[in-house]
Amino acid sequence: MPAIPIQMKRYKITLPKSANTPAPSTERGIQGFVTYATSWSVFCLYLIWAYISHDYLHAIGITYLPSRWWAIIIPWGLLFALFGGTGIYLWMNRRLVHPLSSINLVCDATNPQLGTLLRNDASEADREYFELQQEKYAFIPDGSVMPPTLDLSLDWVNKQLYLQQPPRVWDS
Image 1 (cartoon, rainbow, N blue to C red):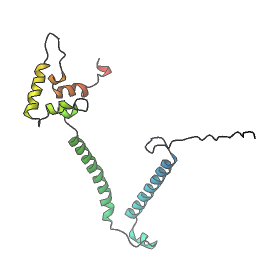
Image 2: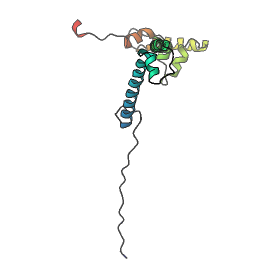
Image 3: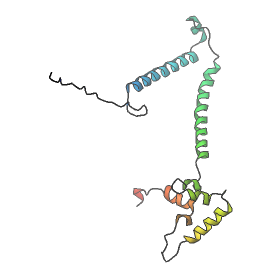
């Protein structure tokens, strides 16, 4: 009996797309349109409630309405939340960022002993070891040893690296 050739189907494998991609998608377009339409509808209802007399609203059957004070409190509350939230965000950012003179800006996984040498809470033995290392690798004026970064002020190094203003074209 002759062998029957088996037809193999080729399946195209597609990986799922990431939800975090900035590319446009249909779901995001629908969500954006619904959000846009809903926000304008709510804003129009707010304006109708704030500016139309209660008598007209009672005439069309809307009898339970909140106080008109909310027409003033809601915008002020939103402004307070916006500026207060921005202020809290800036304060937290300022609080969580290390100053330019912080040793935490140069200590990482590649140089773990530097952190124990330079931190304020280091033991006396660590301080002595650090001073010994500084004497060992001190800058020699004849150029036989390259000066280590420990001889430079960390504050000065960070200012030189990160706070330099780019030269303006019209100044030169």
